[in-house]
Amino acid sequence: MNRKIIFNSILLLLVIMLFTSCTPGGGASSYDDPAGFFMGVWHGWIAPVSLIMGFFNPEIRVYEIHNTGWWYDFGYYMAIISGFGGLSFFRRDKDK
Image (tube, rainbow, N blue to C red):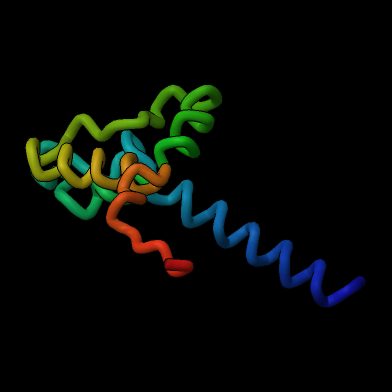
């Protein structure tokens, strides 16, 4: 078997495990230990993956219900907006 195929397969498996390990509603956060700003950023980045996984596992949510409130929301929406190119007006055009 080609080494490149093996490397890519292992890399894909690691990426899938990384995305599924910290999904909202997966039990990592609780009332006593709520999700904060950085978990909000992470959940915003993996929101599309969480949405697809939620179709197959009803415990997986797009948004963590046990969170710190405003800071979690800020991180979540910041990641959603920046992850899909919404903050592109802050980037410089290198051709100018």
